[in-house]
Length: 545
Image (cartoon, rainbow, N blue to C red; front, side):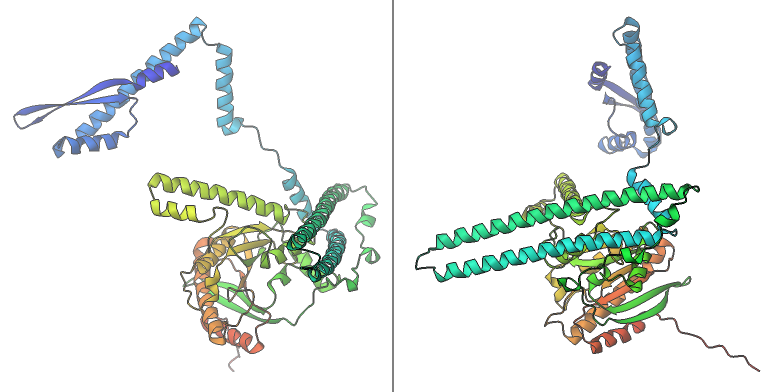
């Protein structure tokens, strides 16, 4: 059949079209290769233009051409079918193999005959966890998670202490060598010792990394198996021991040692809350909050198991598989890693508590890196096909594994204090200048993040108001006021767009400013917010006698 198809592709047929123009009779002859690769309408248009044909034959020519192509294609199909039938009759083709091939193709392409997809382990576990966290067993789950968190935190503390001792010992050794430099030792001896120190640090860090990875894997497996078992026991009404199993035992809660240096200090947090209405005709109510806080405070677990901390964690757990997720915007550089700055601090917080539902932070970053490389390759191929030489030269100069300002990647978490989703927004040094506009990549990145929030049920989002996590000398009071005004106005416009994206769902937007900002500056920003947004005012109703 393939041979016949190949022969058909090389066969030419002549299309004849006769028409009269006045007293003259014309014949149009066009050789066509079958099967025709071009669209009949496009071919008709080219014929009209190439032969300068009169417009009054346009419709008739198009109809005749389409009919000719259709009839010739049917003849080819009939001819191929006759050859195929003869091959089956003569025994050249096995009838059973042919029938099996047809049956397989039919069942794979027809939905009603397709094999139903079996739910994955992750989906089953998500359903079980969602049921348990909304049951009396929720407190037991949180207590178990807290104990696991303390265990990992203590392991990390031991690692930090051991690494600190190693660095102190190596520092003392290096000081002694430097004192002997030029006397009994040379530069080569110093370099050799430095290389030895680096190798020792790498060995120790790899040892602890492996131990932490193994501990978190064991915890995740134990936790998931225990959750499944508890769920099955709860479904059995005759199990009398289940009430004892989910009973809270305060004495079993592990508390951390206070002197290990890893307790997070709680600083005074300034906060202002507002209720606004946005929309032209159908108004939607939103909640706005202005906070002076460290952005990682929304991620860190507190070691002491107080009731307030417990309620925060409970709320996060209850909404993990819901339509009310919480997100956070982190400002990062263009490298997809966790080796420096806010990325390293965020990864450290993520690693302090086992994630029982999603892959670890490093695994997610590796997946993001692969997706970025694939996307860059696809974009490069499309540019090559379109002949964009300028874009091609830019792609060669830029590292393909890095992202551009305004682009962002997303990581999912179930082990953080108050958030489920982290948006890692790429920004450059331009955000520290005072001349950015509403079209800046960082601002447009915020718009795209809010759009993702609308399409993926993220109803609470925390945004760095000044587009920086730390204050510096050039960030004066006028600089802060200009930047805050720009972000407030842009976010207001984006929130008004939300009504067309999601139909007008009430959301909470939290604007965060660095902890080092002064109280005076904070209250100036607080006074600016209701001037830009329409804040709801209370009405006092009095009866008229």
